[in-house]
Image 1 (cartoon, helix red, strand yellow):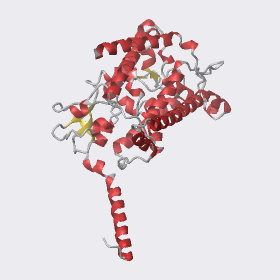
Image 2: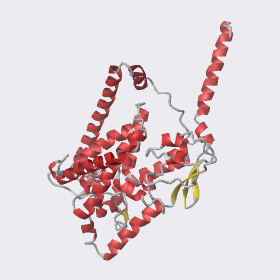
Image 3: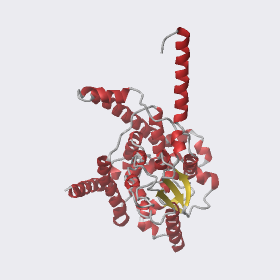
Amino acid sequence: MRSRKRIVITVLVCIALVLLAYFAYLLPFYEFVTNDYDVSFEKLFSWEYLKTLVPLFIIIALAAVGIVLIIRLRRILAKADKNTSRFAHARTERPKAQAPKQKPAPFMVVRWIVMIGFSLVVIFGGLIFGMGVSSLSIPILSCPWNSEEMTSSSCYYLSHLGELFELPVSSILIFFASTLGFIILLGRAICAFLCPMGLVQDIMDKIRRKTKTEGLQMNEKMYGALKPIKWSLVLVFTGLCFAGGNFCNFCPMVATAPILAGISTSLYVSGFIMVFVLIAGFFKRRAFCNICPLGYLMGLFHKVSLFRVKKDCTACTECGACYEACPMGIKMIYTEREKTDVTDANCIMCGECVRCCPEDNALSLTFAGARIYTAKRKNVMSGYKPLLLEREAANEHTDLTDAKTGTPE
């Protein structure tokens, strides 16, 4: 019954997306009178560059308004519900007692440095380094609409096969070789380390944490509700490969890389989707990664990827910390009791499960068989040491005060 319901929902979502694809150019988010694809360093420091950023400013403003409205609505509903308002209001209003902040693991520091660095290279690499390696194709990263980027993007040619096979044979071979090479070498680690959309979503998550806003607590049922959307996007993406069309009208990447590089690109459905990506990414970490069609298609090659998630089932205590921390909602990592390799097609190799695992060597990330990040109890407990010292200092201060005033214990 559930499978039949999911099939019906998937079909309906597919129909809706196909209609959006057909009427994409009738739903402009922002249109430029003339599209300017020429970029130079001089343009990046001119008022003309700010004009190209107008769509991005509009997207950010709409997302900010949406986030504020959702927070306000949540508070209104919490107060209106007499049965749960006391608890919901407390969760919304009072500062939440979060777990102490851990010391940043070297793996996480490297991930952020690589992610920021690649995003800058993708956007401005063509201007800085030239176009010497522009024939290479990476599954994601660079939007092909930006003629000044260093590398081309596989997703464009995969959704425009007609244009791909118009290229010289040598270029087609380089395309497939570089695309498969990156997928085998990195797998969905591309999503965690290289994808600018991943960086945007992680920044939104950081903003939420800094503002101490309560996020969306996902469960299995909610993750299951996202599957029809993911499969619908996968079907539309692969369908447009053969039926023709322009998947770029859906891709939120168009609202980031080309525009930031100074390309005056008109936005259609992709502009609306980017607004929802920012709002969803604020309340749910890596929300778009859960429905990204290209990410899932790359994940299908996880069996041959050099990045793996390994588990020592004898060290696991089934605490569920890895499942709670996973932005993709992968439960197998925590429930598996026999297999050593727990790599999943949805895993983006972000390392959050390893970071939150409180058992030594229970989880680890490996590359070509070598461990690069391993769960350690002391890393999890490192955040509690300052808290314990603070409490001890407070207790000593209380004891001294009692001793001076003569207050009996």
